[in-house]
Length: 232
Image (cartoon, rainbow, N blue to C red; front, side):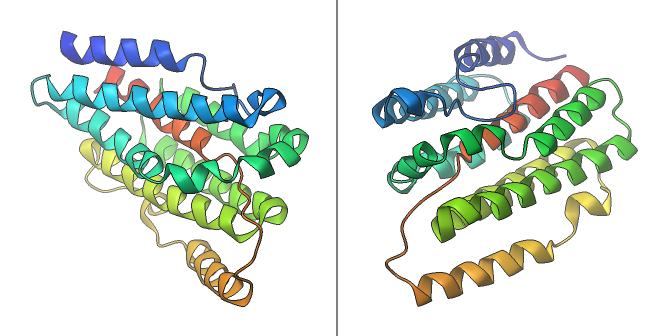
């Protein structure tokens, strides 16, 4: 049984987030049509709301559900702790706005469909599919947007995907001690991207700093966590 304290924290937080995310797990990049300042403020608001959630759940009694929520905030802490680098990337989002709103749509839809299934069927077979879909989305974001926004984009996304993957694995292990290989395997793709980024940045220190909106990927973590809370 989820405590009323956690439910209150979660409900207040998700109400605030309702206006922060699009249907494709993507931060509302259309804000950039108005101004980079609007997107900047929205990012600050998201970090502030997550800090409030963190403080709220700390007041609740210790439980599995509380630990799951705290795990879900870890990637956000990394993002919000490095806002300066993130905010310098908004110019690329704006330059490629139309492309960003369509990119990786198939992968995002596949993940959403799988998470919807997982909300009703928590078998390990579905867990394996969820992990594969997350990997597919990660690879799409890093590959596709690196093409438009360069090495800084890939660097930020890689850090986020690795952090998110660890968080997802930790959350799943609350329920299952042994996970499918798709959830735990060491991805050669991540290592290859990391090596390529290091080489590119050494070769061209003046590379233009661009990035794809990676914050939206974290929204899928929240969708998973709160679906998960309903079933444990």
